Image (cartoon, rainbow, N blue to C red; front, side, top):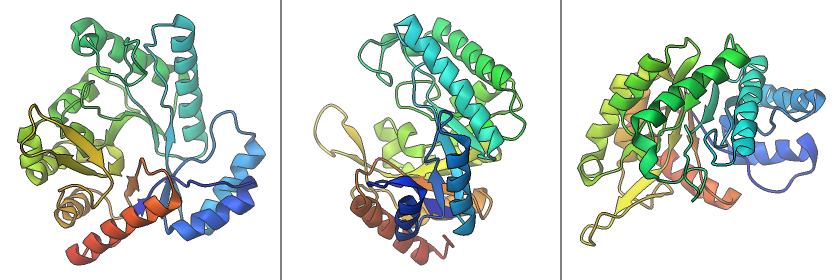
Length: 280
């Protein structure tokens, strides 16, 4: 697999960015550009990645198609179409977003409306609209699972893929986001195995992070955290990923704030890979 993440830090132009890329040891990254970046600048980033044997695994959207403000919602849809077209043009396999929410609390918030039948119909329609407008031939539009949004489990993701019914709709794997109850947390390795067994044929990119639950505090408190700060058995997890996905599949660390934090997380996963006999 190709272990990587997002390049963070301060840089002025692709040249300085390349120095950060080399220092990161990443073999897969999120796109350092978007659909508003000038094509010549994109070309320079892509050339740097090719020169360093690094793949651009994801183009992120991270905007809310169901924002309560119709203008913001439409802008999110337009950006998703632009990002999917960008991914297709530059051979980025995964354009990823969440489904969205009508909540006024935030673009990725929990809300009672998130699981209604009406919202599910809107989710199907919005994904189809984005794919049909962008008309990608290589890239796939993918949804990152969330604890309190569709899809919140592997079975729900399978059903979503079936219901969207578009060739260029695929899966983004974030197993920690689906470890959303004590039963799944206490058998995390078994649950992660189920996620990959059911979704592996559809997976275009994977996020890797850790999970922790307070063992006695009521009621349930589950938190994502950096690798090594939770309880996941990463040697077992990496063996699962290695068994189900192609040998060059991108696996991305996320949500670190600094290069130092990414380095520490990378070292934890790399050590687990060595113990597991998994090539990264």
